[in-house]
Image 1 (cartoon, rainbow, N blue to C red):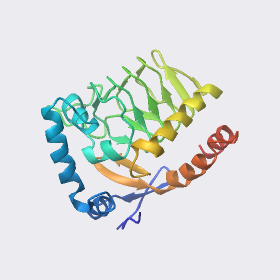
Image 2: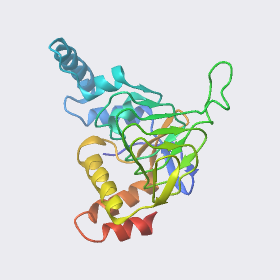
Image 3: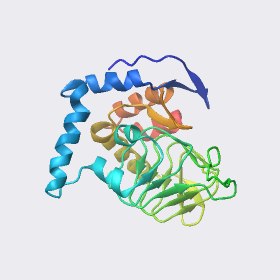
Image 4: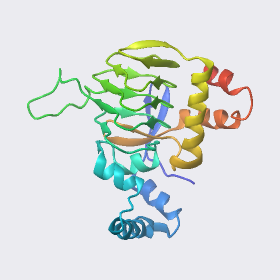
Length: 235
């Protein structure tokens, strides 16, 4: 699929291309039924709801409180169990997995009287796997290829290629942790992520072209013993 991009910005040595309304239109044109795809899906979802069947998109809308656009949540990251999730966030990268009952938001230190908190919330990198019931709070940065363990509390920066667990306990990834990331990437590209490289930053969507290059290499190495070595070299 070819997207038309109009400008670029640099973000930590990555090239980010704005994802525009024209790109969204092009995406839908490439789907079944073309530009009528979202209309047809909404009609199908409506009748399914009448018999008690709810789509993943329904669960994101009904059971979660998320600031990023629904388009990004449905096409850019992996949310396999969309229940009880709160995403109040300044940035979230590509191929991230968000588990049920995860809370990401401000710690309140910089909140204004009108509740506006942009630039005081977490920034999360690429290929990050956040397990159920985790809490990520405050103006912190979580690097690439990070695992946030279930029920952990994270209130400080986490470097790339790390696992964080408990209350801000951080250590480097072990071999079996990298297998978890491989599994997450596999499900992202095979099922959940419809637009590779799509990310969210400061209330806008972008394509991260540098991550896309790395993503292609990682996917090619999945069925070999080179995945772990390659991940360490790329990140």
